[in-house]
Length: 197
Image (cartoon, rainbow, N blue to C red; front, side, top):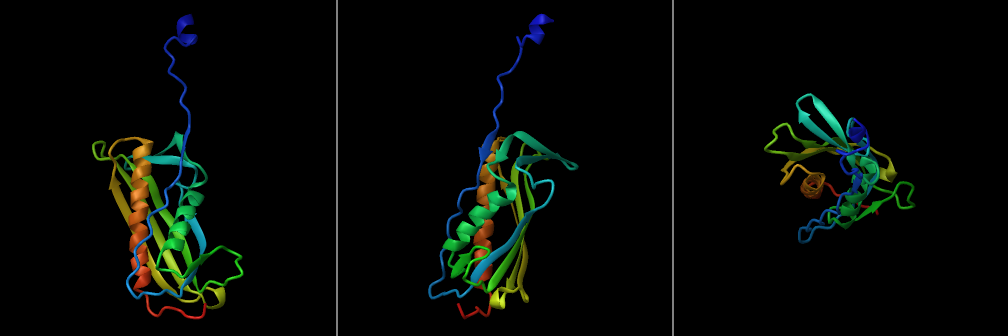
């Protein structure tokens, strides 16, 4: 009993690991395409139960479990907002991406909802990283939202090479890169392209 209480069979302490999304690669612009869209991301919200810092796993149909030893460096919303904004700045789909309160007025506004961001372990032999975003894009004369010009849900399920936080983060990065490339293509297809920067 003394041996058990003294830790003879104790495990080494587990340390919490922190992760961040990588910057997705910029998409290639179409020859001759010139954007006049100046974008501001008005909001990015993450749905519960994914809105904390902890990684979330789905072991079965009705259960979601946070991982106390794997988490985002900052909140899940900030973790996604930073690479999304950076990617769109480099994208040919927009002339510029401005911060809230910028002196440069946007003519396009985005609202992003993160519906799902978790490790899907419902099929133990086929773990996957799941990421689903819903994007609303508005024409915004004088920086004020007017008509919606794009409303779409983007979802990716990326197979994981192992059931580890590192593999999950790798899958989420791939999912985000694919989603943003598809979003860029959707934006480039929009007509008309607003003038008056």
